[in-house]
Amino acid sequence: SDVCSSDLGAWVGSLLTSALRVPGSGGTGLLGVALVCVLCLLFLTGALEAAWMIVGFPLLTAACFLVAYALSAAVDTEA
Image 1 (cartoon, helix red, strand yellow):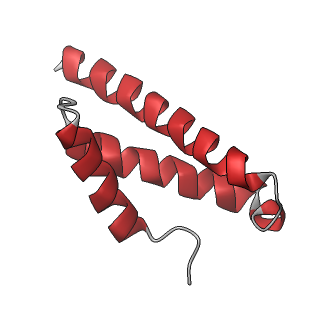
Image 2 (cartoon, helix red, strand yellow):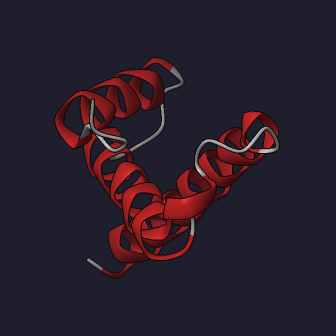
């Protein structure tokens, strides 16, 4: 199984963000999952099976979704 199943992850991310009534939830979900995938592939490939990733991966995911939300909000206000 692939670490970053981007189609399913983006779908779940956009579903959760739309359930929380986040404006632009589709783009935020897709960007959040993409950021997690890129960071995992660039920096965490060797550590994905480490015990500390039980806490580290959800924190990384939350941080990526916050960045994705901030970027989406910034782009939305410029348009």
